[in-house]
Length: 310
Image (cartoon, rainbow, N blue to C red; front, side, top):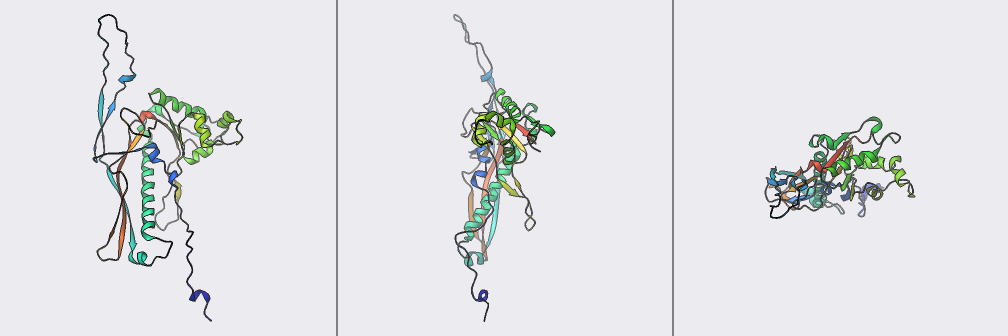
């Protein structure tokens, strides 16, 4: 009598499958560097001086001329925007023989698209957390007992308030606090902060409560992960955003004569997704393409805290 497994094919469950993926809300690059569509791969934008903040006496008597107010602006270059493109190969047999619920074109496109999103997230994170981009008064590095993981000696409330004061003093409204998930997790149980909201019943700070505590419109908690291992090697999964905290002014809607930490300058409105067959008919490629440049446009609108936790 033949074995049952030799005469019946294993059934594929149609309602479940397992994939390790980031949620859409884990990606925060577009919330920190909003996308701005541009017509050309390179160009310029205007940067105004701070003449509008200079006090000029407006008093005038008799037929005296009104005091003149002058200002200057400079052109700052961007680009050239670089092409970003990733692809995936689909064998002909994969296309013709796949059983439900596996959909080769859909699955390959989804995986390549998320890979593009991970790369974009990593690029924006690298630009935002490059210490050399910030003036001395707009950055600090914590160490030892000053790190917020030291619940006894560290003073995160004072550290973040110092950062906010520096951004505000330079003429910006500090409306955004960026705390990568490991940093937020440590801060959410820090006695220095809990003492200030001790009459809440949770015993831990939620994102909404922490945003209110620091009086910011946006408390952004990046959670995106990436796998740095080579194909076939043991997975090495880490957070895209490292050990940093950032206070910033972020304009969600780009506009004229407004300052913000940065933008992602993008040539096309959306990712371009292409499919094409190989000449020999043995399969096809899925390719996702984009043109963009993450640009720090006003470093004074940010304050970088490096190594906030141990």
